[in-house]
Length: 181
Image (cartoon, rainbow, N blue to C red):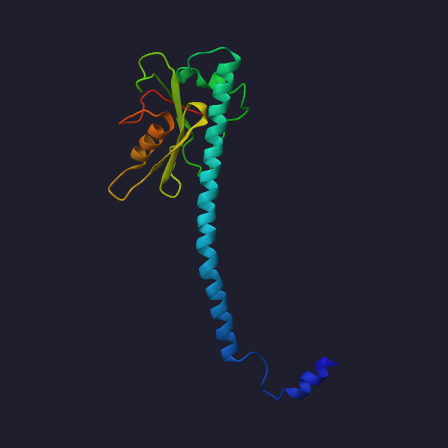
């Protein structure tokens, strides 16, 4: 019945939407997209940051758990870390950004790699929204930011390592192990 009434209301040649109606719809859609797209991109970066922090914390927890259960007072050398971790984590977690895998480095109390390894650091070599992350003993997460003053990703990683370990390194540790098994 409605279709009959509608046909009677329209005159020949008056079918479809008016130009004003179309412009209003396009403007509303554009406004909604202008709000939604930046929020979506921000949400992806925030999710990647949260995922890498969780992965780093899991790796550090597995390392601490092994040390505690096996009465270890030091942490493993770089070459031995996979043997420690694969008992507690079946497969190495991968960074959410893809790219390079997490990296482990044993450290002594002065931050060098020459003495007894009483500390360690695991870091993500990828950056997320200009931020890099590392984890040290007790699962402390450190954050480093890539500033506009020419700072590189490696500089931000060193900053994150220092925040996670409480040390004052000026460069990345040299003896490392990529965590992939």
